[in-house]
Image (tube, rainbow, N blue to C red; front, side, top):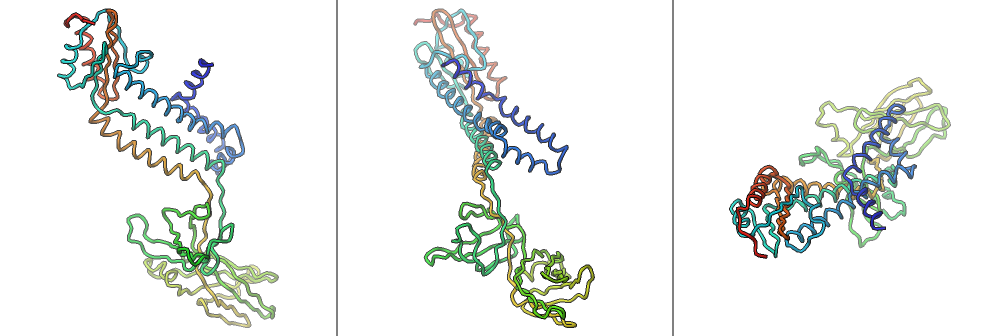
Length: 421
């Protein structure tokens, strides 16, 4: 049973697992690309519906856990070996292991190692030497980042849900349980930040008077009722009244138009009639004024009235105003700002953010440790006329190997004292 467990652990913690799994999904991606343009979406759909693909993707975070355990065990055993406590299985933790049928004394080796910058510790018949800082925290952060990244991808692929809704000024904030509060104001303003030129905020007053007002912006995405809030498009909510000579009863109803930026068109079909009204907001003469009307709310609409495919006439009407011509009447008594918003439930995003933090920490630590303070370790054990020498280096391996082989030459040439053990 122990042998089987060790074999499974060795296979699960193999460095080959991530590239093999990623390679398989890459080949699958290429195959799907021959049949559809939406390759990534199709691949995610296949993975969500296929238990085999989901399990295969889960092998990468599982491999990261196994490697974390293996690295932790190795680190602890290495510390124990350097302190002289561990004897069994020490050789497999080092890069190079050499046995010499000569025994040596410690003082000469310790003096030489100290002369070339190594710290030493003697415990019984064992000498440990080291310099630099261990890269174990870097590997720990890297593997934790890998685990979080692919766990996030797995969760996103298999359980992500998205719902697109209209967030309209004066209306309830759309949530599943209906307790989102009321949208007080939507604001588009110039930004002084280094990334975004403009900021968009949605101010929501709570239903409970004792609660605080919430503000949802563009970035970082806010979270409400278990969903991330992603504003997508600007638009306008109109209350429209329309009458025509052949429609004495008229028509009136709210309409939601995605007509920003200026120049973009969207139409309102008058039900039960051949009429259709196409709205847009005219482009400003100056590009810098492109969003001023949306910010102020002082908006004048241009429209085309169509009967079937024929354009009867064009005109303009301000928000809160009306247009009358040839028996036709178009009134916009109410105009409010709206934001087409995605409500995305995706807990995988949290893991992906954590992975970015772990990878960032690993990168910050790795460069100075590897470049300035690489870890180098040596272990010498003298036992019954045989010296076992072990060497390990995280960086600067050539220089470390030179020192290590110099120690071996000293032992082999018997240029040290006869041991007294």
